[in-house]
Image (cartoon, rainbow, N blue to C red; front, side):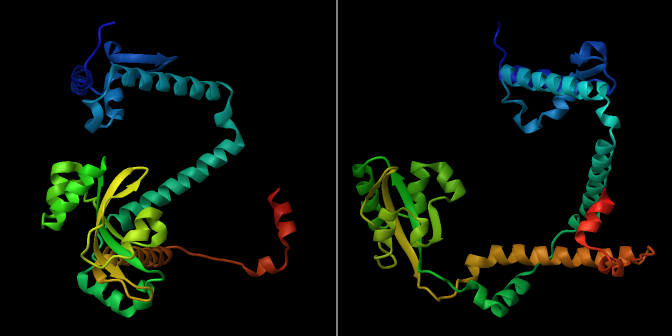
Length: 287
């Protein structure tokens, strides 16, 4: 069979976007009974970002999955499972949950968070006990080498003043982009034992000799150290505080909206009724 390139498949998919919304017979790529999958629907289902990298086998696999699901769906309909009371109840429950989620998405989640730097600073100052360290931590930069000779050469360059990110840029540009050479702060339990044994005993600003592990040879710079009981810097917990305040803000918006919504409805409750029944009798009433 002639091999189809990913570019060809991409063109094959995107051409279908120019077709009308109605399925035309020539556009149908699979059919089960009366239900059909058109090229337009196939293209719409696959994220645009990955279409150009798809292989012919990926397309075929998706189509086969669609056929299998469609067969099972139609079989369920044939057996009348959609008419069963338990399915109808599950469907109603799902509809309620989806509608509630959509309501919160439209009314609450659509509003952008407005957490300011001043609010973050105030939270940090007023809740300092939350950011006290329970263990000693070390902040390190890290380079992994495939051989001891390479590790020793890199360490020598570092000790002579070469910037860490400059060496990383030559060794692994992806590491530079994601900054995964910066390990941040970690405890002894969060790093390889052979590394922890050395970096926790070195002074700030020093470099390790090559450290051998199952992964290769490691060279690290000790950037900072903090002792147990010391408070984390604001820069370390800024993102954590922002997320917490964002969630608190969302909860406040939710409670405010719920209160407004409740004012539009007549609500009654009879909690005293619970006092007259046991959990067993409640279960019996449900039957």
